[in-house]
Length: 224
Image: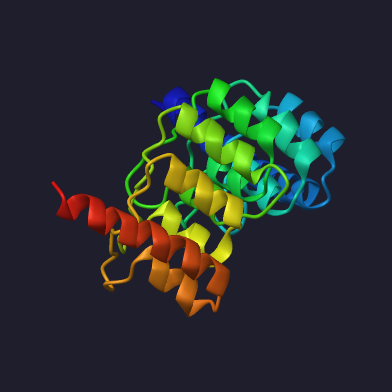
């Protein structure tokens, strides 16, 4: 009994010392991410830090790296054994979603090769790609569609990628989604269509494109 008590005490003592050590590693990890210090991140991983460690705001490390444009750290983490590529932050954002909105085509490709989810309930990567206007946004959206992204994915309030493109994206993005079969007549839970999203942002040129598509769809359905 005495031996068991001593062992239990020793184990408890080890845990007390281990927790501050892990907390210190996590703090170093967050600082290294913010600074894009990929060398330090690699050292921490070699010392046994879990690549899925959360920062002080609940972001998985790779998500925090992408939010901070710490691309060298993101690359190191994507190569780390055991990384869970579909872990999300408290806002539901996954690494793939952030790579999409940041226009990081190569990272999108890498994440897809690692098994990142394209379709999911609520906000989806295509929403993020459609709302961006980065140099590679069109290529990213096309890649997602080629990989069977649901074109009319609905956000929690029923907004689709086309609606977000109408308000935030480029004309080319809107045309890409329309040509790929996006439903211009859909309404979200507020009763808004993609035309309304464009009108709300005073994007008159986008209103004309979408209204033309909307009217053409109505005429087509009227002849069925």
